[in-house]
Image (cartoon, rainbow, N blue to C red):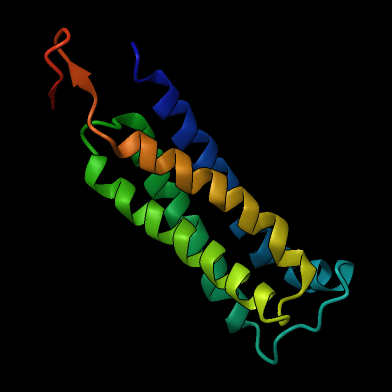
Length: 132
């Protein structure tokens, strides 16, 4: 079972994103205070992305159950991780992002790389390099 690592990857991604989303749904004011970051002027600016993380968590669970059968969904995970880390690093370069967002961006870069590798076709057959 050479594909088991992909299942674990997406189980971990599901847990990570869902837990992060739940944390921001229920504890976002405390998290912002903990990191000494000025909160937005409306809870919806935090709650909507937090709920999206929970939804993505469920998608990653679906991928984990059958990585080959749900390969087309992996591209959405790649998009999520590229969008978040790309925005954070762009604004970090411009000097305008609170430090609380940077560790999560680096974690997403790791997920991004692993998702790209996980999406690649798995070679079957001998040295012929036939792909599925």
